[in-house]
Amino acid sequence: MNLKEVLAISGQSGLFKFVAQSKNGVIVESLTDGKRSNASGSAKVSALGEIAIYTETDDLPLAQVFENIYKHTAGKEAISPKASPEELKKFFAAVLPEYDRERVHVSDIKKVVAWYNLLIGIGMTDFKIEEKNKENEKEA
Image (cartoon, rainbow, N blue to C red):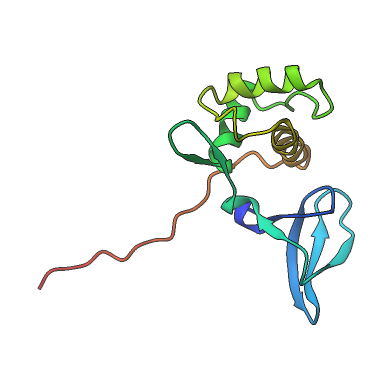
């Protein structure tokens, strides 16, 4: 499983994987307990592979942020998402010093940390997103 297959759904805690298309939305399976549910067509569903974090220069893919956290924590769980806002900001600054402090809020940091901890908890340690293979153009 890679980050493009992991989904976050607004209004629901945790992370999910896509199972199938349904009449009214998509059927997803919780990564924590394996329970399946329907995410309605009106719910905002985002693949983690498509999410980026604002930095002072450009947006950084969430996969790279997770890799930075993984290196910083030596593959262990990160700080608790329930830590104080000051502790969360300090941790995130250590992991991603160039993050945009104006546009990245504490609630965003909490989500990133909670998602990272959940993924580490289920044994996911490879956060790279596979690039599509481009066919080499051959000159005649």
